[in-house]
Amino acid sequence: MKPAELPTPALVVDLPTLEENVATMARRWPGESLRPHVKAFKSTALAKLLDRVGHHGFCAATLREVEGMADAGLGADILLANETLDTDRLAALARRDDLRLTIAVDSIETIEAAAAGGVGEVLIDVCVGLPRCGCEPADAGRLADLARDRGLAVRGVMGYEGHIVGLEDRSDRRNGTDASMADLAAAHQLVGGAVVSGGGTGTWDLNSSVTELQAGSYTLMDTAYAALDLPFTQALTVAGTVLSVNRSRGFAVADVGLKALGMDHGLPRVEGHDVWFCSDEHVTFAPRDETPWPSVGQAISVLPAHVDPTVAYHERMHVVRDDEVVDVWPVDLRNW
Ligand SMILES: Cc1ncc(COP(=O)(O)O)c(C=O)c1O
Image (cartoon, rainbow, N blue to C red; front, side):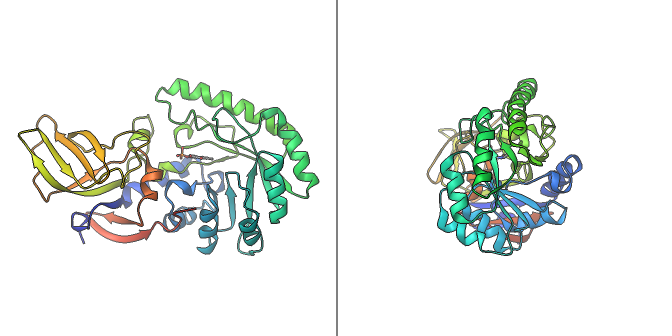
């Protein structure tokens, strides 16, 4: 099947581009120095591709992602890089012998939940500037002692500089990363352990102080990250069909609306066109300069601005090589 024949809207992954992105990252962060974050792509088929090139440890953001990775035989070393209080689901995971699970903790409550759930290993999650979970760096040692008192093994620290990864100016990104990683190093001094986990796609070559990089978006990419000076190329598009053309009012409309796109990083792109806006089921756009007007029924490609939520809206990705759909990967880590 040709991608242009897919029922739309449909997620399309260009396999050679994905493979190139994976190879570029693996040259700098080979093997287990990269702990890819599955939240970006939510697919165990894609995770298996990363496993095959030597990345055997993964980050997850939800318990569903942890469960799905273990079900797929990818549970060798999963870090739930997020807080949870769900002791029942933790207990079910802790009973599995096909899963090594480490979870992030940043409070007495999350430490108690890990201990009650029978999880053996934790990382102390440190706030390095992003106001989204993480303890104060100076409090990390106290929490590590508390975790050890509860019988948990503390593998080290994690701190995600999510407020920095998307900054367009490279020197701002460098300075921000240095400041965040200084906080993480201070916390690590107090905590100990072999693991210092952090970083993302936008800081992949600026963050040299972590022992493992947590990047995920680099695999499929999006227009927000494509605006930075990164060597990764957009492998993910949403295939759409032009539904209506109104030349007298200067716009065309396709069936890729905000229910098929993560919109928190702004409007998607349609090459050669200006995107006016998205509504539930529609994207309205207009050809720029020399671009010819599209016709009703024509296939178009829409480039999402934010990969993670875009993928999460869809049930499957259509994998394309040389303009042929060669595989279909379920987005099997969806939901929570
Ligand atoms: C905890 C954590 N680590 C790492 C990442 C890296 O992601 P990305 O590759 O999108 O920069 C994220 C993304 O949100 C995250 O939440």
